[in-house]
Amino acid sequence: MHKIRVDLHERSYPIYVKNESLPTVGSILKQLNINPQVVLVSSQNVSALYKDVVEKSLKNEGFQVQYILMPSGETNKNLKTVQYLYDTMLDLKMDRGSTVIALGGGVVGDTAGFLAATMYRGMNLVQIPTTLLAQVDSSIGGKVGINHARGKNLIGAIYQPKIVIVDPTVLKTLEFRQRVSGFGEVIKYGFIRDRIFTQFLLENFSDILTLKNLDHVNAAIIRAIEIKSFIVSADEHESNLRMVLNFGHTVGHAVEHTAGYGTYTHGEAVIIGMCAALKLSTDMGLLPVEIAQQYIQHLRRIPIPGSLKKYNTDRMYEAMTHDKKVRNGKIQFVLLQKIGDAVIRDDVPKSMIYETLEWVKDLQFVNNI
Ligand SMILES: NC(=O)c1ccc[n+]([C@@H]2O[C@H](COP(=O)([O-])OP(=O)(O)OC[C@H]3O[C@@H](n4cnc5c(N)ncnc54)[C@H](O)[C@@H]3O)[C@@H](O)[C@H]2O)c1
Ligand SMILES: O=C(O)C(=O)C[C@@H](O)[C@H](O)[C@H](O)COP(=O)(O)O
Ligand SMILES: [Zn+2]
Image (tube, rainbow, N blue to C red; front, side, top):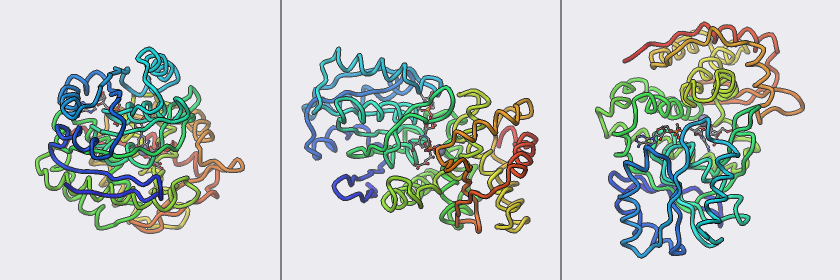
């Protein structure tokens, strides 16, 4: 068992990373002394694969388990789903002391997390992430929330879980495209904080994505979680340092929104956004052009389907103006001054942003590895 801690005083919590840890969820939670009443929130695919093992382990330890199936996919990360979850919680007579367990990818984690943050002004939350993206990113740090028709994650809260339990073996059932998506967030940590980790990921990306080398997969998950935990512990409310976790997201969120939720996975959009951020880092005079080009070439070896050509540049720009990093009307970008060293800049000229969006629309990625 590998344990990493998010250090937030009375809201601190551990992240457990261990192969085959799902059958031990009950005993892990028992040690936390949480109320015996729990509600598992999950989605169809994940439920069919992993609900029974988790439910059994909880019941073996004396937990009373209720269950809510929520619709999956980015298009359902919205208020309608949250309303359905509130209603079902009331139907099930779940009280304030009971615990919400989010079993699934980032969509389940963000939505069920928002439920836990808001219902009865806050219930206990446990995250059991089952996608690579959720294991290294969305289950950690407390950002919970849903989309609004005008933009990604516009409604939400910062609400920390009591524990995060990561079982890397569940990635075996995850579709290849979803592993690519998670890889986007994993390599983000390298770019913003650890050049050597970036190199490791680029050298081994095919073995990691195909799960050919599980030691490399676990090493990547653990290093990514260490970086995220360190950053969240230093700046929970995104006043300064935490903003760097948005590397690739200013353009990434705009791509997701403009193309229509679900057209690109979140991680694919972030990979596209990181290419844009690398180019802007050069255009702003921060990063030598040959370094940026070299890493953009590496990122283009990651398979991302489709073409951005047909999307409207004005709409993409408009989506960026709804970014939560906008301050006093200025769009803020996370740029790199070195690989492994990120800075926030709010002085990127509008013309340069437009030029970059046009460039992004022509970007091409490989079809497979
Ligand atoms: N809160 C945060 O800090 C944060 C960080 C990054 C991303 N996010 C959000 O996370 C969301 C994306 O999450 P995601 O990439 O996990 O996608 P997702 O939750 O949509 O899951 C992708 C698909 O994989 C399925 N699935 C999940 N685990 C599986 C498994 N082990 N085996 C087989 N199928 C499985 C799901 O049912 C779904 O169909 C986005 O909404 C993004 O904005 C939030
Ligand atoms: O934890 C963070 O902080 C992040 O920014 C992680 C991101 O990967 C994630 O996509 C997050 O939801 C984006 O945050 P947002 O505040 O820009 O919606
Ligand atoms: Zn993200």
